[in-house]
Length: 621
Image (cartoon, rainbow, N blue to C red):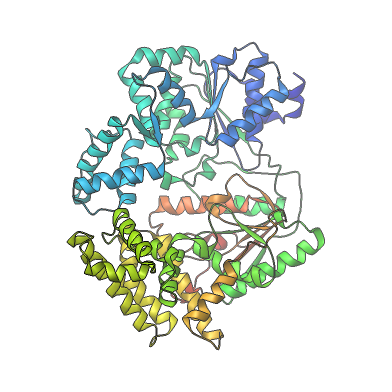
Protein backbone atom coordinates (compact mmCIF):
# COMPACT_ATOMS: atom_id res chain seq x y z
CA UNK A 1 0.00 0.00 0.00
CA UNK A 2 1.17 3.50 -0.79
CA UNK A 3 0.02 4.72 2.62
CA UNK A 4 2.67 2.58 4.33
CA UNK A 5 5.28 4.96 2.93
CA UNK A 6 3.96 7.61 5.32
CA UNK A 7 4.87 5.51 8.38
CA UNK A 8 8.17 5.22 10.20
CA UNK A 9 9.64 1.69 10.62
CA UNK A 10 8.06 1.05 14.03
CA UNK A 11 4.65 2.38 12.98
CA UNK A 12 4.80 0.25 9.84
CA UNK A 13 5.73 -2.85 11.86
CA UNK A 14 2.72 -2.28 14.12
CA UNK A 15 0.39 -1.89 11.14
CA UNK A 16 1.67 -5.05 9.38
CA UNK A 17 1.62 -7.29 12.48
CA UNK A 18 -2.05 -8.19 12.15
CA UNK A 19 -2.21 -11.64 13.75
CA UNK A 20 -1.94 -12.38 17.45
CA UNK A 21 -1.72 -10.09 20.49
CA UNK A 22 0.12 -6.82 19.97
CA UNK A 23 0.99 -4.17 22.52
CA UNK A 24 2.04 -0.83 21.06
CA UNK A 25 3.74 1.30 23.70
CA UNK A 26 3.22 4.68 22.10
CA UNK A 27 5.08 7.54 23.74
CA UNK A 28 3.73 11.08 23.84
CA UNK A 29 3.52 12.62 20.36
CA UNK A 30 4.63 9.41 18.64
CA UNK A 31 1.65 9.02 16.30
CA UNK A 32 -0.42 6.34 18.02
CA UNK A 33 -3.68 7.47 16.41
CA UNK A 34 -2.02 7.16 13.02
CA UNK A 35 -1.05 3.56 13.84
CA UNK A 36 -4.59 2.55 14.81
CA UNK A 37 -6.10 4.31 11.78
CA UNK A 38 -3.65 2.84 9.28
CA UNK A 39 -3.88 -0.60 10.87
CA UNK A 40 -7.66 -0.68 10.32
CA UNK A 41 -7.22 0.67 6.79
CA UNK A 42 -4.61 -2.03 6.11
CA UNK A 43 -6.90 -4.79 7.43
CA UNK A 44 -9.67 -3.56 5.11
CA UNK A 45 -7.20 -3.44 2.22
CA UNK A 46 -6.24 -7.07 2.97
CA UNK A 47 -9.85 -8.12 2.52
CA UNK A 48 -10.96 -8.26 6.16
CA UNK A 49 -14.67 -7.45 6.28
CA UNK A 50 -15.59 -4.22 8.11
CA UNK A 51 -17.96 -6.11 10.43
CA UNK A 52 -15.05 -8.25 11.63
CA UNK A 53 -13.23 -5.23 13.11
CA UNK A 54 -13.95 -3.44 16.37
CA UNK A 55 -12.03 -0.29 17.27
CA UNK A 56 -12.52 1.08 20.79
CA UNK A 57 -11.42 4.45 22.11
CA UNK A 58 -12.39 6.69 25.01
CA UNK A 59 -14.13 9.67 23.42
CA UNK A 60 -16.74 10.03 20.71
CA UNK A 61 -14.64 12.80 19.18
CA UNK A 62 -11.65 10.47 18.83
CA UNK A 63 -13.86 7.78 17.30
CA UNK A 64 -15.33 10.21 14.76
CA UNK A 65 -11.90 11.53 13.81
CA UNK A 66 -10.67 7.97 13.32
CA UNK A 67 -13.59 7.15 11.02
CA UNK A 68 -12.91 10.26 8.93
CA UNK A 69 -9.23 9.38 8.58
CA UNK A 70 -10.04 5.83 7.51
CA UNK A 71 -12.57 7.19 5.04
CA UNK A 72 -9.86 9.40 3.54
CA UNK A 73 -7.51 6.44 3.17
CA UNK A 74 -10.12 3.89 2.08
CA UNK A 75 -13.34 5.52 0.94
CA UNK A 76 -14.94 2.20 -0.01
CA UNK A 77 -15.54 0.93 3.53
CA UNK A 78 -18.99 0.88 5.11
CA UNK A 79 -19.40 3.08 8.18
CA UNK A 80 -22.41 1.03 9.25
CA UNK A 81 -20.54 -2.26 9.16
CA UNK A 82 -17.34 -1.05 10.80
CA UNK A 83 -17.57 -0.49 14.56
CA UNK A 84 -15.35 2.30 15.84
CA UNK A 85 -16.73 3.69 19.06
CA UNK A 86 -16.26 4.20 22.77
CA UNK A 87 -16.62 1.27 25.16
CA UNK A 88 -20.00 2.65 26.23
CA UNK A 89 -21.33 3.07 22.68
CA UNK A 90 -20.30 -0.45 21.73
CA UNK A 91 -21.95 -1.89 24.85
CA UNK A 92 -25.17 0.05 24.24
CA UNK A 93 -25.43 -1.54 20.78
CA UNK A 94 -24.92 -4.98 22.27
CA UNK A 95 -27.48 -4.43 25.03
CA UNK A 96 -30.05 -2.97 22.62
CA UNK A 97 -29.76 -6.14 20.58
CA UNK A 98 -30.03 -8.67 23.41
CA UNK A 99 -31.79 -7.34 26.53
CA UNK A 100 -35.37 -8.52 27.02
CA UNK A 101 -36.46 -4.90 27.24
CA UNK A 102 -34.05 -3.03 24.99
CA UNK A 103 -35.82 0.35 25.17
CA UNK A 104 -33.91 1.40 28.27
CA UNK A 105 -33.16 4.95 29.29
CA UNK A 106 -29.58 5.98 30.02
CA UNK A 107 -29.43 8.01 33.23
CA UNK A 108 -26.96 10.88 33.25
CA UNK A 109 -25.32 12.33 36.37
CA UNK A 110 -28.29 14.59 37.20
CA UNK A 111 -30.74 11.70 36.82
CA UNK A 112 -28.60 9.54 39.09
CA UNK A 113 -28.40 12.31 41.65
CA UNK A 114 -32.19 12.74 41.71
CA UNK A 115 -32.72 9.00 42.03
CA UNK A 116 -30.26 8.53 44.88
CA UNK A 117 -31.86 11.46 46.71
CA UNK A 118 -35.19 9.62 46.50
CA UNK A 119 -33.52 6.55 47.97
CA UNK A 120 -31.95 8.53 50.79
CA UNK A 121 -35.31 10.07 51.61
CA UNK A 122 -37.09 6.70 51.62
CA UNK A 123 -34.46 5.12 53.88
CA UNK A 124 -34.26 8.23 56.08
CA UNK A 125 -30.49 8.50 55.63
CA UNK A 126 -28.46 11.72 55.59
CA UNK A 127 -25.47 10.57 53.51
CA UNK A 128 -24.21 12.80 50.72
CA UNK A 129 -25.49 11.69 47.27
CA UNK A 130 -22.12 12.24 45.59
CA UNK A 131 -20.29 10.01 48.08
CA UNK A 132 -22.95 7.29 47.75
CA UNK A 133 -22.88 7.35 43.95
CA UNK A 134 -19.07 7.27 43.88
CA UNK A 135 -19.08 4.15 46.08
CA UNK A 136 -21.72 2.44 43.95
CA UNK A 137 -19.82 3.37 40.79
CA UNK A 138 -16.60 1.84 42.10
CA UNK A 139 -18.49 -1.37 42.95
CA UNK A 140 -19.94 -1.60 39.44
CA UNK A 141 -16.54 -0.92 37.89
CA UNK A 142 -15.37 -4.04 39.71
CA UNK A 143 -18.41 -6.08 38.60
CA UNK A 144 -19.95 -6.16 42.09
CA UNK A 145 -23.74 -6.11 41.83
CA UNK A 146 -26.05 -4.86 44.57
CA UNK A 147 -26.80 -8.44 45.61
CA UNK A 148 -23.10 -9.29 45.93
CA UNK A 149 -22.07 -6.05 47.64
CA UNK A 150 -20.41 -6.94 50.95
CA UNK A 151 -19.84 -4.07 53.41
CA UNK A 152 -16.43 -3.88 55.08
CA UNK A 153 -17.07 -0.83 57.30
CA UNK A 154 -19.83 1.22 58.89
CA UNK A 155 -20.20 3.54 55.89
CA UNK A 156 -20.58 0.62 53.47
CA UNK A 157 -23.21 -0.94 55.74
CA UNK A 158 -25.34 2.11 54.98
CA UNK A 159 -24.46 1.92 51.29
CA UNK A 160 -25.73 -1.66 50.84
CA UNK A 161 -29.49 -0.94 51.26
CA UNK A 162 -29.04 2.25 49.24
CA UNK A 163 -27.34 0.36 46.41
CA UNK A 164 -30.12 -2.26 46.45
CA UNK A 165 -32.90 0.33 46.42
CA UNK A 166 -31.14 2.49 43.82
CA UNK A 167 -30.68 -0.48 41.50
CA UNK A 168 -34.26 -1.58 42.10
CA UNK A 169 -35.53 1.84 41.05
CA UNK A 170 -33.29 1.79 37.96
CA UNK A 171 -34.74 -1.58 37.03
CA UNK A 172 -38.32 -0.43 37.70
CA UNK A 173 -37.73 2.54 35.39
CA UNK A 174 -35.85 0.43 32.85
CA UNK A 175 -32.92 2.75 33.32
CA UNK A 176 -29.19 2.17 33.09
CA UNK A 177 -26.53 4.44 34.52
CA UNK A 178 -23.16 4.72 32.78
CA UNK A 179 -21.57 1.99 34.88
CA UNK A 180 -24.49 -0.36 34.18
CA UNK A 181 -23.83 -0.13 30.46
CA UNK A 182 -20.43 -1.77 30.86
CA UNK A 183 -21.26 -4.05 33.78
CA UNK A 184 -24.47 -5.46 32.29
CA UNK A 185 -22.72 -6.24 29.01
CA UNK A 186 -20.05 -8.34 30.73
CA UNK A 187 -22.66 -9.98 32.98
CA UNK A 188 -24.77 -10.74 29.90
CA UNK A 189 -21.80 -12.49 28.30
CA UNK A 190 -21.09 -14.43 31.49
CA UNK A 191 -24.70 -15.53 31.94
CA UNK A 192 -25.46 -16.23 28.26
CA UNK A 193 -22.24 -17.53 26.66
CA UNK A 194 -23.97 -18.01 23.32
CA UNK A 195 -24.26 -14.23 23.02
CA UNK A 196 -20.57 -13.82 23.84
CA UNK A 197 -19.77 -16.46 21.22
CA UNK A 198 -21.75 -14.49 18.67
CA UNK A 199 -19.50 -11.45 19.16
CA UNK A 200 -16.34 -13.51 19.45
CA UNK A 201 -17.09 -14.92 16.01
CA UNK A 202 -17.97 -11.55 14.58
CA UNK A 203 -15.07 -9.46 15.84
CA UNK A 204 -11.93 -11.20 14.65
CA UNK A 205 -9.82 -8.09 15.21
CA UNK A 206 -10.02 -5.84 18.27
CA UNK A 207 -8.09 -2.57 18.57
CA UNK A 208 -8.11 -0.65 21.87
CA UNK A 209 -6.79 2.90 22.18
CA UNK A 210 -5.53 4.42 25.48
CA UNK A 211 -5.35 0.97 27.05
CA UNK A 212 -3.65 2.37 30.14
CA UNK A 213 -6.92 4.12 31.01
CA UNK A 214 -9.07 0.96 31.14
CA UNK A 215 -10.73 -0.16 34.37
CA UNK A 216 -11.48 -3.73 35.49
CA UNK A 217 -14.79 -4.16 33.66
CA UNK A 218 -13.29 -2.79 30.41
CA UNK A 219 -10.37 -5.16 30.88
CA UNK A 220 -12.79 -8.09 31.18
CA UNK A 221 -14.74 -6.92 28.12
CA UNK A 222 -11.63 -7.00 25.93
CA UNK A 223 -10.28 -10.26 27.38
CA UNK A 224 -13.57 -12.14 26.92
CA UNK A 225 -14.12 -10.80 23.42
CA UNK A 226 -10.79 -11.97 21.94
CA UNK A 227 -10.66 -15.47 23.43
CA UNK A 228 -11.53 -17.14 20.13
CA UNK A 229 -9.24 -15.35 17.64
CA UNK A 230 -6.70 -13.75 19.99
CA UNK A 231 -6.16 -10.84 17.59
CA UNK A 232 -5.97 -7.93 20.00
CA UNK A 233 -3.99 -4.75 19.46
CA UNK A 234 -3.76 -2.46 22.46
CA UNK A 235 -2.17 0.95 22.08
CA UNK A 236 -1.24 3.01 25.09
CA UNK A 237 1.44 4.54 27.24
CA UNK A 238 2.03 3.37 30.79
CA UNK A 239 3.92 6.63 31.35
CA UNK A 240 0.67 8.55 30.78
CA UNK A 241 -1.60 6.61 33.14
CA UNK A 242 -3.01 9.42 35.32
CA UNK A 243 -6.66 8.54 35.94
CA UNK A 244 -6.67 6.09 38.84
CA UNK A 245 -9.24 8.32 40.57
CA UNK A 246 -11.64 7.34 37.75
CA UNK A 247 -10.95 3.65 38.23
CA UNK A 248 -8.20 3.26 35.60
CA UNK A 249 -5.80 0.45 36.49
CA UNK A 250 -2.23 0.73 35.18
CA UNK A 251 -1.79 -3.00 35.83
CA UNK A 252 -3.88 -3.73 32.74
CA UNK A 253 -1.09 -2.48 30.48
CA UNK A 254 1.82 -3.53 32.69
CA UNK A 255 0.57 -7.13 32.86
CA UNK A 256 -0.38 -7.45 29.20
CA UNK A 257 2.16 -10.23 28.55
CA UNK A 258 0.74 -12.25 31.46
CA UNK A 259 -2.77 -12.09 30.01
CA UNK A 260 -1.85 -13.06 26.44
CA UNK A 261 0.65 -15.58 25.09
CA UNK A 262 3.20 -14.84 22.37
CA UNK A 263 2.77 -11.09 22.69
CA UNK A 264 4.51 -8.78 20.25
CA UNK A 265 5.61 -5.50 21.83
CA UNK A 266 6.47 -2.51 19.67
CA UNK A 267 7.69 0.77 21.13
CA UNK A 268 6.95 4.03 19.36
CA UNK A 269 9.71 6.26 20.69
CA UNK A 270 10.13 8.86 17.94
CA UNK A 271 8.38 12.00 19.08
CA UNK A 272 7.05 14.36 16.41
CA UNK A 273 5.91 17.06 18.83
CA UNK A 274 8.62 18.35 21.14
CA UNK A 275 12.20 19.56 20.88
CA UNK A 276 15.20 17.61 22.14
CA UNK A 277 15.57 20.00 25.09
CA UNK A 278 12.02 19.24 26.27
CA UNK A 279 12.20 15.48 25.73
CA UNK A 280 15.51 14.98 27.48
CA UNK A 281 14.03 16.61 30.57
CA UNK A 282 10.81 14.58 30.43
CA UNK A 283 12.77 11.34 29.95
CA UNK A 284 14.96 12.13 32.95
CA UNK A 285 11.93 12.66 35.21
CA UNK A 286 9.91 9.60 34.16
CA UNK A 287 12.95 7.32 34.40
CA UNK A 288 12.63 7.52 38.19
CA UNK A 289 9.41 5.48 38.08
CA UNK A 290 9.81 1.79 38.83
CA UNK A 291 6.35 0.64 37.67
CA UNK A 292 6.81 1.13 33.92
CA UNK A 293 7.66 -0.80 30.78
CA UNK A 294 10.48 1.53 29.89
CA UNK A 295 11.16 3.55 26.76
CA UNK A 296 13.06 6.69 25.81
CA UNK A 297 11.52 9.30 23.55
CA UNK A 298 13.70 10.95 20.94
CA UNK A 299 13.17 13.50 18.20
CA UNK A 300 14.73 14.79 15.03
CA UNK A 301 14.08 18.31 16.35
CA UNK A 302 17.56 18.65 17.78
CA UNK A 303 18.38 21.45 20.17
CA UNK A 304 15.59 23.89 20.80
CA UNK A 305 15.34 26.67 23.39
CA UNK A 306 16.36 25.52 26.87
CA UNK A 307 13.72 24.71 29.45
CA UNK A 308 13.44 27.75 31.72
CA UNK A 309 12.89 27.43 35.47
CA UNK A 310 11.55 30.40 37.40
CA UNK A 311 11.49 30.82 41.19
CA UNK A 312 8.99 33.37 42.52
CA UNK A 313 8.79 34.82 46.01
CA UNK A 314 5.09 33.93 45.97
CA UNK A 315 2.27 32.95 43.60
CA UNK A 316 1.81 36.58 42.52
CA UNK A 317 5.39 36.85 41.30
CA UNK A 318 4.93 33.51 39.56
CA UNK A 319 1.78 34.76 37.79
CA UNK A 320 3.56 37.99 36.85
CA UNK A 321 6.38 35.97 35.28
CA UNK A 322 3.94 33.90 33.22
CA UNK A 323 2.10 37.04 32.10
CA UNK A 324 5.33 38.80 31.18
CA UNK A 325 6.62 35.88 29.10
CA UNK A 326 3.31 35.39 27.30
CA UNK A 327 3.23 39.08 26.36
CA UNK A 328 6.87 38.97 25.28
CA UNK A 329 6.53 35.90 23.04
CA UNK A 330 3.03 36.63 21.73
CA UNK A 331 4.26 40.05 20.67
CA UNK A 332 6.39 38.21 18.13
CA UNK A 333 3.83 35.60 17.06
CA UNK A 334 0.36 37.01 17.92
CA UNK A 335 -1.05 33.54 18.58
CA UNK A 336 -2.27 33.37 22.17
CA UNK A 337 -3.99 30.03 21.60
CA UNK A 338 -0.53 28.50 21.31
CA UNK A 339 0.08 29.12 25.02
CA UNK A 340 -1.01 26.86 27.88
CA UNK A 341 -0.62 27.29 31.63
CA UNK A 342 -0.90 23.99 33.50
CA UNK A 343 -1.46 23.54 37.23
CA UNK A 344 -2.19 20.68 39.65
CA UNK A 345 -5.36 21.99 41.35
CA UNK A 346 -8.07 24.33 40.07
CA UNK A 347 -7.57 26.78 42.95
CA UNK A 348 -4.23 27.82 41.43
CA UNK A 349 -5.98 29.55 38.55
CA UNK A 350 -7.31 32.48 40.63
CA UNK A 351 -4.05 34.44 40.85
CA UNK A 352 -3.27 33.67 37.19
CA UNK A 353 -6.69 34.88 36.08
CA UNK A 354 -6.34 38.14 37.97
CA UNK A 355 -2.85 38.73 36.53
CA UNK A 356 -4.11 38.09 32.99
CA UNK A 357 -7.08 40.41 33.47
CA UNK A 358 -4.88 43.22 34.71
CA UNK A 359 -2.61 42.71 31.69
CA UNK A 360 -5.67 42.57 29.36
CA UNK A 361 -4.66 39.08 28.27
CA UNK A 362 -7.71 37.04 27.20
CA UNK A 363 -7.74 33.47 28.47
CA UNK A 364 -9.86 30.35 28.39
CA UNK A 365 -10.38 27.85 31.21
CA UNK A 366 -10.37 24.35 29.71
CA UNK A 367 -11.99 21.52 31.59
CA UNK A 368 -13.43 23.85 34.21
CA UNK A 369 -14.96 27.23 34.83
CA UNK A 370 -13.63 30.63 35.80
CA UNK A 371 -12.53 30.76 39.45
CA UNK A 372 -15.39 33.05 40.44
CA UNK A 373 -17.81 30.97 38.38
CA UNK A 374 -17.18 27.75 40.32
CA UNK A 375 -20.12 26.45 42.32
CA UNK A 376 -18.63 26.80 45.77
CA UNK A 377 -17.48 30.36 45.07
CA UNK A 378 -20.84 31.34 43.56
CA UNK A 379 -22.60 29.86 46.59
CA UNK A 380 -20.56 31.92 49.05
CA UNK A 381 -20.96 35.03 46.88
CA UNK A 382 -24.74 34.44 46.83
CA UNK A 383 -24.82 34.50 50.64
CA UNK A 384 -22.79 37.71 50.69
CA UNK A 385 -25.02 39.36 48.06
CA UNK A 386 -28.13 38.73 50.19
CA UNK A 387 -26.46 40.52 53.09
CA UNK A 388 -26.13 43.57 50.86
CA UNK A 389 -29.42 43.23 48.97
CA UNK A 390 -32.06 40.95 50.51
CA UNK A 391 -34.31 41.45 47.46
CA UNK A 392 -31.87 39.43 45.34
CA UNK A 393 -34.20 36.45 44.72
CA UNK A 394 -31.76 34.68 42.38
CA UNK A 395 -29.07 34.52 45.05
CA UNK A 396 -31.61 33.60 47.73
CA UNK A 397 -33.01 30.65 45.80
CA UNK A 398 -29.47 29.48 45.07
CA UNK A 399 -28.53 29.03 48.73
CA UNK A 400 -31.78 28.70 50.66
CA UNK A 401 -31.19 24.95 50.81
CA UNK A 402 -27.38 24.91 50.49
CA UNK A 403 -26.20 23.12 52.56
CA UNK A 404 -29.36 21.00 52.82
CA UNK A 405 -31.59 22.31 55.59
CA UNK A 406 -34.96 20.78 54.72
CA UNK A 407 -36.34 23.56 52.49
CA UNK A 408 -37.46 21.71 49.39
CA UNK A 409 -38.88 22.74 46.02
CA UNK A 410 -42.51 22.53 47.18
CA UNK A 411 -41.78 24.80 50.13
CA UNK A 412 -39.96 27.32 47.93
CA UNK A 413 -42.87 27.28 45.47
CA UNK A 414 -45.35 28.10 48.26
CA UNK A 415 -43.12 30.96 49.45
CA UNK A 416 -42.91 32.34 45.90
CA UNK A 417 -46.70 32.15 45.60
CA UNK A 418 -47.07 34.17 48.81
CA UNK A 419 -44.56 36.75 47.57
CA UNK A 420 -46.53 37.15 44.33
CA UNK A 421 -49.90 37.41 46.12
CA UNK A 422 -48.66 40.11 48.50
CA UNK A 423 -46.32 41.85 46.07
CA UNK A 424 -43.33 41.50 48.37
CA UNK A 425 -39.80 40.18 47.98
CA UNK A 426 -38.99 36.53 48.43
CA UNK A 427 -37.00 37.35 51.57
CA UNK A 428 -39.95 39.27 53.03
CA UNK A 429 -42.19 36.32 52.22
CA UNK A 430 -39.81 34.11 54.17
CA UNK A 431 -40.38 36.30 57.20
CA UNK A 432 -44.18 36.47 56.79
CA UNK A 433 -44.80 32.80 56.06
CA UNK A 434 -43.65 31.90 59.57
CA UNK A 435 -46.87 33.45 60.96
CA UNK A 436 -49.13 31.43 58.63
CA UNK A 437 -50.17 27.77 58.46
CA UNK A 438 -49.29 27.43 54.79
CA UNK A 439 -46.35 25.17 55.55
CA UNK A 440 -46.11 22.11 57.80
CA UNK A 441 -44.35 22.72 61.15
CA UNK A 442 -41.05 21.11 60.12
CA UNK A 443 -40.75 23.33 57.03
CA UNK A 444 -41.79 26.41 59.03
CA UNK A 445 -39.09 25.61 61.62
CA UNK A 446 -36.48 25.23 58.87
CA UNK A 447 -37.50 28.61 57.39
CA UNK A 448 -37.39 30.23 60.83
CA UNK A 449 -33.90 28.88 61.47
CA UNK A 450 -32.67 30.09 58.06
CA UNK A 451 -34.12 33.61 58.54
CA UNK A 452 -32.54 33.86 61.99
CA UNK A 453 -29.20 32.75 60.51
CA UNK A 454 -29.36 35.41 57.79
CA UNK A 455 -30.47 38.09 60.29
CA UNK A 456 -27.40 37.23 62.35
CA UNK A 457 -25.12 37.76 59.36
CA UNK A 458 -26.87 40.97 58.30
CA UNK A 459 -26.27 42.35 61.80
CA UNK A 460 -22.69 41.03 61.79
CA UNK A 461 -22.02 42.83 58.52
CA UNK A 462 -22.19 46.20 60.30
CA UNK A 463 -19.47 45.30 62.81
CA UNK A 464 -17.15 42.86 61.04
CA UNK A 465 -14.77 43.12 58.12
CA UNK A 466 -15.43 41.13 54.95
CA UNK A 467 -12.87 38.45 55.75
CA UNK A 468 -14.08 37.85 59.31
CA UNK A 469 -17.71 37.91 58.17
CA UNK A 470 -17.09 35.41 55.37
CA UNK A 471 -15.13 33.06 57.60
CA UNK A 472 -17.99 32.95 60.10
CA UNK A 473 -20.56 32.53 57.34
CA UNK A 474 -18.74 29.54 55.83
CA UNK A 475 -18.50 27.99 59.29
CA UNK A 476 -21.99 28.68 60.73
CA UNK A 477 -23.90 27.74 57.58
CA UNK A 478 -22.29 24.29 57.64
CA UNK A 479 -20.85 24.81 54.16
CA UNK A 480 -17.27 24.01 55.14
CA UNK A 481 -18.31 21.02 57.24
CA UNK A 482 -20.21 19.50 54.33
CA UNK A 483 -17.21 19.76 52.00
CA UNK A 484 -14.97 18.24 54.67
CA UNK A 485 -17.36 15.29 55.11
CA UNK A 486 -17.37 14.77 51.35
CA UNK A 487 -13.57 15.02 51.20
CA UNK A 488 -13.97 17.69 48.49
CA UNK A 489 -10.34 18.81 48.70
CA UNK A 490 -10.39 20.86 45.48
CA UNK A 491 -13.46 22.81 46.59
CA UNK A 492 -12.00 23.42 50.03
CA UNK A 493 -8.82 24.67 48.34
CA UNK A 494 -10.93 27.00 46.20
CA UNK A 495 -12.61 28.45 49.29
CA UNK A 496 -9.19 28.98 50.92
CA UNK A 497 -8.10 30.80 47.78
CA UNK A 498 -11.29 32.88 47.86
CA UNK A 499 -10.55 33.93 51.44
CA UNK A 500 -7.04 34.91 50.38
CA UNK A 501 -8.54 37.11 47.65
CA UNK A 502 -10.67 38.87 50.30
CA UNK A 503 -7.62 39.40 52.49
CA UNK A 504 -5.72 40.89 49.57
CA UNK A 505 -8.69 43.12 48.76
CA UNK A 506 -8.82 44.47 52.31
CA UNK A 507 -5.07 45.07 52.31
CA UNK A 508 -5.03 46.99 49.03
CA UNK A 509 -8.30 48.98 48.97
CA UNK A 510 -9.32 52.06 50.93
CA UNK A 511 -13.00 51.13 50.77
CA UNK A 512 -13.02 47.80 52.60
CA UNK A 513 -16.80 47.31 52.74
CA UNK A 514 -18.63 44.22 51.54
CA UNK A 515 -20.37 46.36 48.90
CA UNK A 516 -17.00 47.43 47.49
CA UNK A 517 -15.69 43.88 47.48
CA UNK A 518 -18.73 42.58 45.59
CA UNK A 519 -18.46 45.41 43.09
CA UNK A 520 -14.79 44.55 42.59
CA UNK A 521 -15.60 40.88 42.00
CA UNK A 522 -18.38 41.72 39.53
CA UNK A 523 -15.82 43.51 37.34
CA UNK A 524 -13.66 40.39 37.30
CA UNK A 525 -16.53 38.12 36.27
CA UNK A 526 -17.94 40.35 33.55
CA UNK A 527 -16.49 38.82 30.37
CA UNK A 528 -19.48 39.34 28.07
CA UNK A 529 -17.57 41.99 26.09
CA UNK A 530 -14.76 39.59 25.23
CA UNK A 531 -14.46 38.46 21.64
CA UNK A 532 -14.92 34.70 21.77
CA UNK A 533 -13.22 34.32 18.39
CA UNK A 534 -10.03 36.03 19.55
CA UNK A 535 -7.01 33.88 20.51
CA UNK A 536 -6.83 33.17 24.22
CA UNK A 537 -4.26 31.71 26.57
CA UNK A 538 -5.34 28.24 27.69
CA UNK A 539 -5.53 27.56 31.44
CA UNK A 540 -6.15 24.02 32.68
CA UNK A 541 -5.22 21.33 35.13
CA UNK A 542 -2.55 18.81 34.22
CA UNK A 543 -5.24 16.13 34.07
CA UNK A 544 -7.20 18.14 31.50
CA UNK A 545 -4.11 18.65 29.33
CA UNK A 546 -3.61 15.00 28.38
CA UNK A 547 -3.90 14.52 24.63
CA UNK A 548 -3.35 18.20 23.86
CA UNK A 549 -0.31 20.08 22.62
CA UNK A 550 0.80 23.72 22.59
CA UNK A 551 3.83 25.60 21.31
CA UNK A 552 4.52 27.13 24.73
CA UNK A 553 3.71 25.47 28.03
CA UNK A 554 4.02 26.91 31.53
CA UNK A 555 3.88 24.40 34.39
CA UNK A 556 3.31 26.36 37.60
CA UNK A 557 3.38 25.33 41.24
CA UNK A 558 6.11 22.69 41.10
CA UNK A 559 6.30 22.33 44.85
CA UNK A 560 6.04 19.49 47.32
CA UNK A 561 2.41 19.33 48.38
CA UNK A 562 1.15 20.46 44.99
CA UNK A 563 3.10 18.28 42.57
CA UNK A 564 3.32 15.68 43.93
CA UNK A 565 0.08 16.48 45.73
CA UNK A 566 -0.04 16.16 49.50
CA UNK A 567 -2.70 13.44 49.22
CA UNK A 568 -0.29 11.18 47.30
CA UNK A 569 1.19 9.37 50.28
CA UNK A 570 1.91 5.89 48.94
CA UNK A 571 4.76 5.28 46.52
CA UNK A 572 2.35 4.06 43.82
CA UNK A 573 0.47 7.37 44.15
CA UNK A 574 3.68 9.36 43.89
CA UNK A 575 4.54 7.48 40.70
CA UNK A 576 1.22 8.59 39.22
CA UNK A 577 2.03 12.18 40.19
CA UNK A 578 5.36 11.79 38.37
CA UNK A 579 3.47 10.55 35.30
CA UNK A 580 1.27 13.63 35.60
CA UNK A 581 4.39 15.81 35.57
CA UNK A 582 5.64 13.91 32.51
CA UNK A 583 2.33 14.44 30.72
CA UNK A 584 2.56 18.18 31.38
CA UNK A 585 6.13 18.43 30.09
CA UNK A 586 5.36 16.54 26.89
CA UNK A 587 2.50 18.90 25.95
CA UNK A 588 5.11 21.50 24.89
CA UNK A 589 6.20 21.69 21.26
CA UNK A 590 8.62 24.63 21.19
CA UNK A 591 9.41 25.72 24.73
CA UNK A 592 8.69 24.65 28.29
CA UNK A 593 8.66 26.87 31.38
CA UNK A 594 8.69 25.45 34.92
CA UNK A 595 8.03 27.52 38.02
CA UNK A 596 7.53 27.34 41.75
CA UNK A 597 7.02 29.80 44.58
CA UNK A 598 9.06 30.09 47.77
CA UNK A 599 5.80 30.86 49.59
CA UNK A 600 2.26 29.93 48.54
CA UNK A 601 -0.60 31.12 50.69
CA UNK A 602 -2.92 28.33 49.51
CA UNK A 603 -1.04 26.04 51.84
CA UNK A 604 -0.75 28.25 54.94
CA UNK A 605 1.89 30.54 53.45
CA UNK A 606 4.80 28.58 54.88
CA UNK A 607 8.02 28.16 52.97
CA UNK A 608 7.60 25.69 50.12
CA UNK A 609 10.07 23.06 49.01
CA UNK A 610 10.74 22.60 45.30
CA UNK A 611 9.07 19.53 43.83
CA UNK A 612 11.16 16.38 43.86
CA UNK A 613 10.47 16.26 40.12
CA UNK A 614 12.42 19.48 39.69
CA UNK A 615 15.28 18.01 41.67
CA UNK A 616 15.22 14.97 39.39
CA UNK A 617 15.86 17.36 36.50
CA UNK A 618 19.07 18.61 38.13
CA UNK A 619 21.75 19.32 35.58
CA UNK A 620 19.26 19.64 32.75
CA UNK A 621 17.66 23.02 33.45
